[in-house]
Image (cartoon, rainbow, N blue to C red; front, side):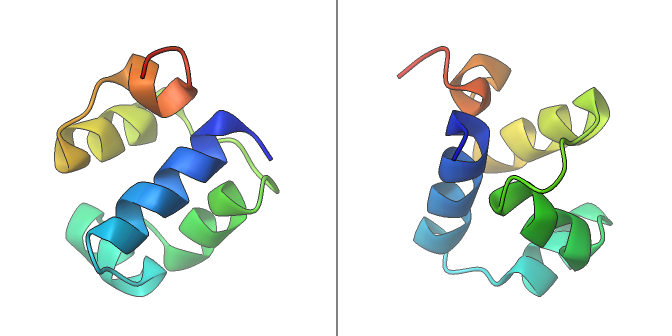
Length: 67
């Protein structure tokens, strides 16, 4: 499992959101979020930036480059 998928799932669950709820908040398909969390797909940079802003973390953190 990639650091991105681990961190996305961790941040989402810590926020108490389902994949559907997160998708609705960011206008992203919940299926895409599920695929990202399960390492079945890689998000576009725009989506990584949107997720980083939503969770108030850096892109580097999302990518596993920062703690």
